[in-house]
Amino acid sequence: MRIFRHTRDVHDGLKGAVVAVGNFDGVHRGHQALIRQARQLADERNAPLGVLAFEPHPQEFFHPGSECFRLTPLRTKARLIADQNVDVLYALAFDAEMASKPAQEFVMDVLVEALAVGQVVVGPDFRFGKGRTGDSTVLSYMAEMEGFGVTIVEPVEDEAHGKISSTRIRDALKAGRPEEAARLLGHWWTIEARVEHGDKRGRTIGVPTANMRLDDYLKPAFGVYAVRAMVMDDDAPLSRHEGVANLGVRPMFETQTPLLETWLFDFDSDLYGKHLAVELISYLRPEAKLDGLEALKSQIAKDAEAARAALKAVS
Image 1 (cartoon, rainbow, N blue to C red):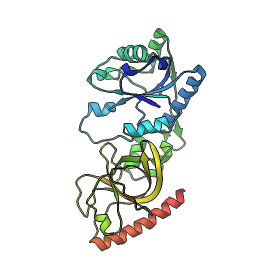
Image 2: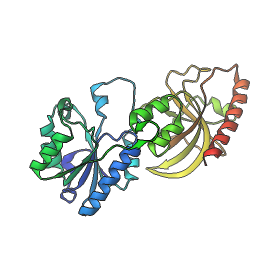
Image 3: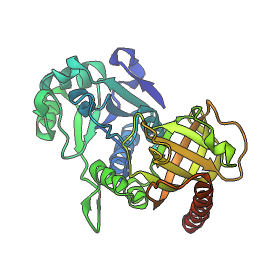
Image 4: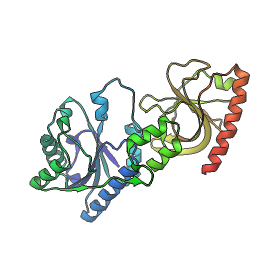
């Protein structure tokens, strides 16, 4: 899959594409259904399939400095979109210029002149343009005038709670329900980052951990998780491992910045500087302040046993 950050880089071979437009945060089951519909239309037209999303997420632009809410930063989002058999991702900059475009200008400048789309695929709640004044009705009217098609894909619903949405997934993760989040996503929620040097306390008690910051991610429920991890090379997994992880501020040591600290079972290679993708499988317990290193060692052993059992249950 090719990735374009600017429309000026798009070549003529991609003109006439079927393009799915949205935020696609999480690339959940609803997003996947929309992209599948777009893929079918692209195949019928013998056209490329594109996805158009914005970086940063518009909410980040309008509310800078607020707590991060994203399920998928660009790297993770791009990998998940590529898994949907997409040919090209347009990750366009959402800046002051883009935010100030009226809906009609967005259609003309981006969809018609820059991308020359053949078909646009969106959900029924799609909004665009300055002040979110554009909707599927405006888009369909302009599409008829400019000679491209529009397909509206209805949201995916589950039997229990209705429409699958990124908001529901965020709520599940903040409540410590990663299994529910995975059911809505259609994949395990994953934190991807480069492994950094920590204080190396884990090594002193025989539990070396891979330390990762959560800078660009939603902060889920703090606590201990059963996890699966992939050591990545670019966007391809080199190896897969099971483990247990603490996510949070470590009350014993009063860490200021939340960290994901992952102990991989039966693994002793150096991970510093490597890119790691950690899937949260099961929430085991909240963080706790323990009385000294011996108590910590004992609790880690219990957590590891609980993690192995939880991982076995979902394998």
